[in-house]
Image (cartoon, rainbow, N blue to C red):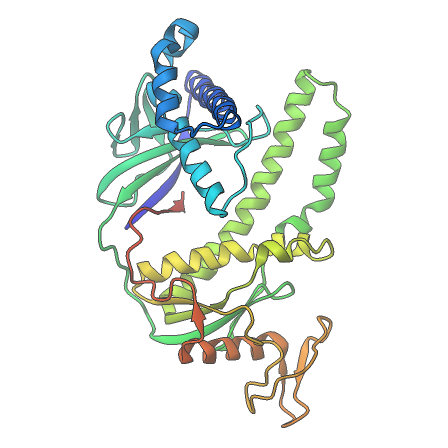
Length: 380
């Protein structure tokens, strides 16, 4: 199992400047590689990331001498990333790769495991030397690589570690079903309810005000740059509040239960409903399910997804009768056959648990199986 620990860096001005140049180099190489890929594909050829890299390496220092000051991983890894992106695109699991624009994409660059080392609360990086970490690396094992990235005006390093058969002890062995909602983000079949912080809704007015102020600033001015940073910090705060809730909730589910069952919702399709898209995104359903899956493996439990066509909300958990229709506004489930009355989400969670135990599941099933090529991030 590969786990990654995302740690904030305590950087100097010189280090931040170098990191920004590394990100710019990675973005420049990505765009150049994507343009070459598109040209070859339009000509009827079959482009490959490594072939594009060999051609680029032949004269990159003659054409772009400033790259000598940037570590080689910054202008070699984008080709591997592009190859991976197109493989996902042709499989139908991702959109077609796009060109990256400065200020409108995630600034990051990759470092191979033989180019840096971690020494306590210090990481020694190529070209720039020692950079302080705001906390020590949590995991023990073989370091596989790292990604340095920027969020607002803060820099982070995400270090991937091969931890082997990593396990944490559970405190319970129950099996529960989980229903995801908007009013109550997570409803568990054992009666637990977790209302999300709705961080976007709570900060929406402030976000709109800062966005209006930013749009009025003159392009290229220092005031516009400062305004953009204020806006970025607010976005980061909203995301951090949401992520904190996700981590605490999913850790509790994985630690206290031997089996956790979710409904296989088509979240992407549901986001097309403009009346619900913001609320669903603010709740972060996909992220809750993703975290619950990998944490179930860490705690030695089972994670499974129930078929999205299973009528978990319409079915009475007592008598099994299924309603023909159920409006979204009906928050209390009332069964006409047996008279059972219960909260809509709790009734659905019980049905999901029953279906999971009966094996009406799809997806990965047991979380104990190894997923060697995948890393999970534990933020600092």
